[in-house]
Amino acid sequence: MPDRHEDRNLRDALRVWDAERRPQAPPFTAVLRRIAAAPSPLDRPRWPVVHVLRLAMALARAQLRIVPWLVVPAALLTAALAALAARVLGVGQDSSVVVTAFSSLMLVGVAVTVTMALSTAGPDALSLSTPLGPPVVVMARVTVVLGIDASAGVLASWAVASWGAGGGFAAVLAGWAVPLAVVAGLVTCVALWTTPWAGAVTGLLLVPFVSPRPEVETGVATVVGLLWEIATPTAAVVLGAGLLAAAAASSHRALASGATATA
Picture 1 (cartoon, rainbow, N blue to C red):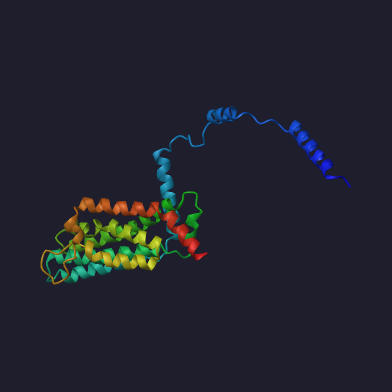
Picture 2: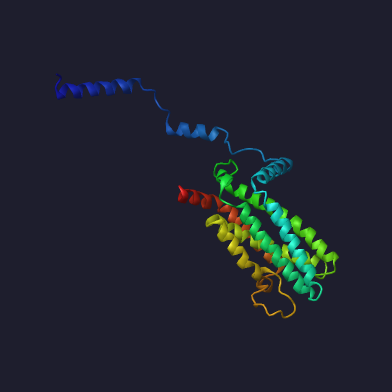
């Protein structure tokens, strides 16, 4: 049995043998120069606008297959109810009251449909593994839903204006279109970071604050139309766009934290 001294000699011999036959690594400066000279994978030519538009359309079509089909009938039903309410109120109420009621119902529909589209059940978990990333997917999905809401809202606004209620098409359209992004942005943030039902409740509570205030005394709380008192329509649109951008930008962390919590 070899003693401890012989074991040490054997290890030293093996270490020397390995050092003599090991391939020599290049110096650090040579590696650095090689990396600097190699083309970077990030140095890619910019995509042409046509290619970007095609990718955006493909992503939108993909979201149409994921968004619950009930979003479309919900948007149409809400728009029909809003138009019916405007028709009834237009008989004996001021046009500003008609716009307030119509806009409030339209914004309630926006809160509901956005919440439905951001449900955490089923295919939403796929957004964590898509090459485009959750921010792009969330923004595309919300854009698709808002497009459905806007299409139904424009048709309903045209119907209300054609009946002579609401003071004209522009006034009826602006009543719900200006605060549209504010409601959608806040609902998206809350739905992503908490639960979809909490986003819906937040949107419903927000509607009175962002609906246009009627010009006549109606006995309702003074919070109605608060957004229109503190911000211009342009500022309201910018605020809504900022909320949507913030929701999309934080969606990766929100979805990851939700997936960790449910694991």
